[in-house]
Length: 157
Image (tube, rainbow, N blue to C red; front, side, top):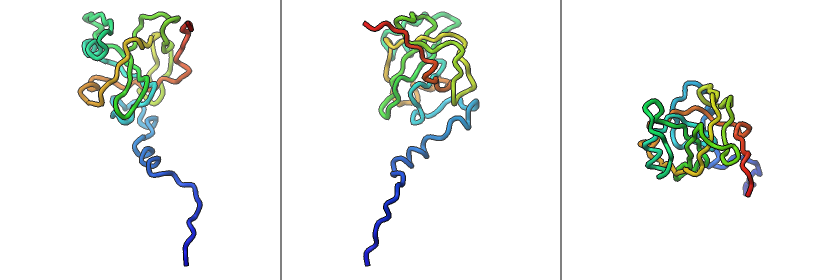
């Protein structure tokens, strides 16, 4: 006697593993300060990237190296298994040339943070962050930027 296989839809092994590895960050919300690389996603925002390291990683980030302001936020453009592609953020930029995160944006799955200023994405200084804890040890997870908060008024050429 042969058994017939049931034709049922069940999630594949990789889907189950991915679900287990990606906890619901909204449950933890304000208590999250840092998260492992495996949980990083596109549009996440982190604070406190040291200007000296940004200068080294980008080769060109125009940090001012002032006494009071020695860090910048960084934004995840693309999350990948081999390294995440980030760009620094700055309060200086041009709406017609840079995308930006609007002022007053309520970040999700994070520290109940609302942006207090317009934050330009300095995509000309984008870089790949190696998946090595040494490069992310200072970063503070702020949350995910909703797509509705990313403004793109760049002129098409």
